Length: 462
Ligand code: NAI
Image 1 (cartoon, rainbow, N blue to C red):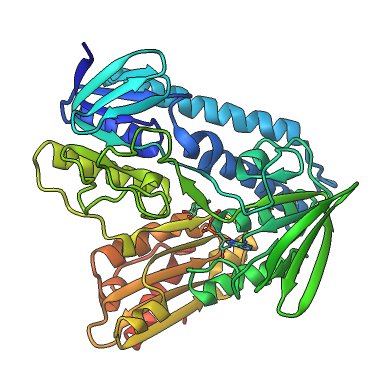
Image 2 (image 1 turned 180 degrees about the vertical axis):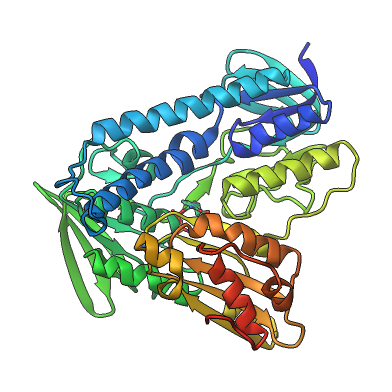
């Protein structure tokens, strides 16, 4: 007889573990099936390890710039082994914390690979032979790096994000295929620790989807730091010799680029295969994502899906939010569907990028009479104090009502500053609401207040 739970969760990443924690907090008896350690891509192969390595790069930049502050720290060098060890310590500490939270809430963690045996019966079989059923089943098996034809990952010279996070030596020259979130974070990191980096992006600019004025701040910084960015380029293949020669094409022009490593960061694919979904009644779209409604319900009653497995932004915090919606629905309360247009994004390259809400173009496309306000960090006292003046805060607002439709930031601590931007966008605040708020002085966040005030027609310093 399968062991029965209120909810069986398949996959222990941010979507799955959040469902388990929140479900347990709501009084549900939860089984969480996980084939590795809990934490998923974010904790073991994504956000957390990547941000640790980017922090190494940040420390390096700070030490390199220390002389300007009268601090002579000599010529810094990087010992990647120490950085990787620290990364592992951070990951282990957070994993242990998560494990003890799950234990504290009496979640039954079942180690092994789970497969759906009968979706309608919410029946899961685990590789160790355990059989589980739940009143509800939540699918949260996540995603894996995607490659392009001819660029199979070998883990040595053709690398996915997983491999870069374990890399013990900095390649002399690196080609990064794909200039999205992962491509730009790795370009920034690898260039800072000494690699000669070329980003090869198919579209006309890096960071597609990001407001172009914000993406331009990153492009300019990359140029200053000698990161080559080639856009509008089609990769046709590569040859292996002592070096790797990447072949690319831009219109009629052929480009050959000699490098020591290739990083492929062209997106991620959902892990919906081999988990028993074929013929289960759970609908999977042509790109492999599990189809859900705005309450995270699949086509099979009582079966939910959350996180990177569903076609919504592949972000840990979106997985958390989707888990809350699923559990709230399971317990029969009214769940507020997620407004995906307003989800806050954070990209941790240098300079950082963060945004929430519509870009200027997206707002125009939706028929708004758009008004924008751009304030640059070069005029902000804290930015000058810390010596980080690259970047800007851009507010996109509806001219008639003053409602803030989008906030877009590039610059120091943008990923922290976006909290206020998200609050404004999500609560449909107006520019005068925001302009009336006091921002401590001197702070980076003052730029946000200045941008809002400028939209009211009476700025202070702007
Ligand atoms: P992405 O979708 O953000 O970017 C992929 C890039 O590769 C795009 O710019 C695309 O135009 C380009 N591309 C695709 N095929 C190409 C080809 N054949 N040649 C050249 N360029 C090509 O995907 P990425 O960066 O791999 O990240 C995956 C997901 O992980 C993101 O969607 C994001 O949700 C998440 N992520 C978020 C981060 C954050 O918020 N800090 C950091 C890292 C990842």
